[in-house]
Length: 161
Image 1 (tube, rainbow, N blue to C red):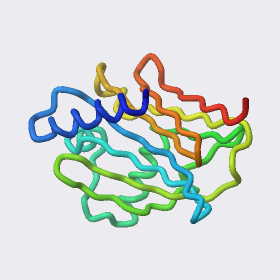
Image 2: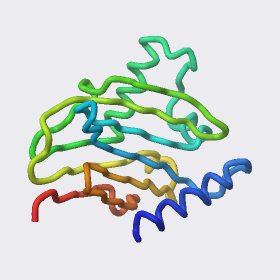
Image 3: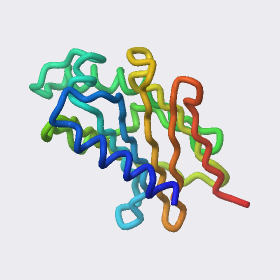
């Protein structure tokens, strides 16, 4: 039910994307792709907010991609059990702008977490007091959704009971 509510909020946000949007919202998905034995990290953010946060050339040159990676490394922290998954392990799969949103997708391979996944998401919290970062984690039958804000930047997903 919580996932459906978050998706509804997201769809409303997308519907408002034709205007100068009145809300500050990002979506981050971390999903294990079993068929490929890798993780996929996707960030969706309003393009004007993204441009306000980081000034990048649209050329996607190696220097630009490195700048993007350095910025994201400061904004998103992923830990599997006690192992930090550095952005140096991430491989850019796709970076595109569609309508008023920017989509950035990375993949990475690493040992699976055993007990827990911890994610800290600080996207745009330094720019907007009302920023909300929706985070969805999917690993097989496990799905967990979280709303992260200035007061609550961390999501903890327990994989064992």
